[in-house]
Image (tube, rainbow, N blue to C red; front, side, top):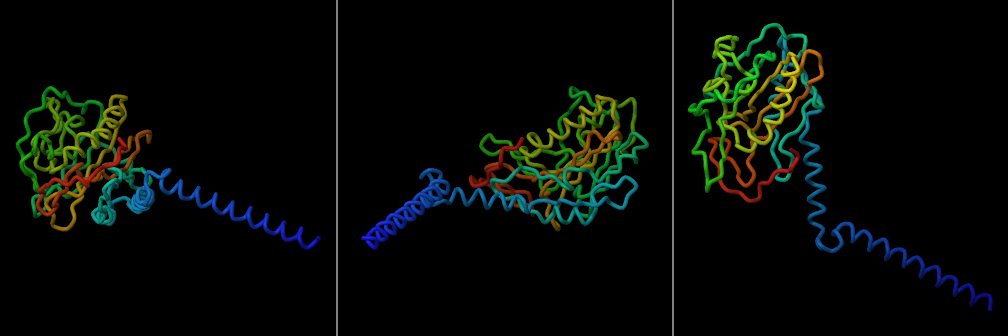
Length: 290
């Protein structure tokens, strides 16, 4: 009789074990397939893959350029140029843990340092602005832009705006600055139609993303802060359209401080960065982080 009771206990124990295994397997299936709505589990794996890719699209540590005011170094420029946008990723990433490599104590004179165009007529070098409150521009003085930077093409497809003439140093924070970069009190307009301050930028990157960071600069200036702001379009090799743009700024009191890289992308379109031409691509979408 004792042996029979032992067998019953063993059977009961085995039954409990397999019941637990089945429950665990069911829970794993439920999570990985979103309750059965993703039977193959592809959506879950894609989210994990996109997350891993996004983490790899980071430059956690950057060093200042060898200039009295610092800024983007040649080495970090090349790192940014090698980044590829992955569909479904964020429209921008932080650089140097979102801290500028500009040297805040280098602010001396209200001016903009415009870099010369390179041998391909590109704005591939940094423009650096030393700004104060009087540089906040009156938007009503804007005029139509006619400069065609490298990579520029017809602007619309089926009613969708694709290209913008993107400013490096925004019109809205460059009041009084002339083409030589000096402040002229008689000039109330911001920078316009300056070939040294424009590049071919996607309408999405310019109007939806870059404006967020330019707004932060305007707020700081209106608070009477002095700000150093640098913008650098990032080109890969001899391509005529920039892959993105590095924006960084720091106020002399350190309260404003950011360093980001914006991918030059347009949802629903892909670009040939060699010549700037766009084509419809419904597989290109951008994560909403703005």
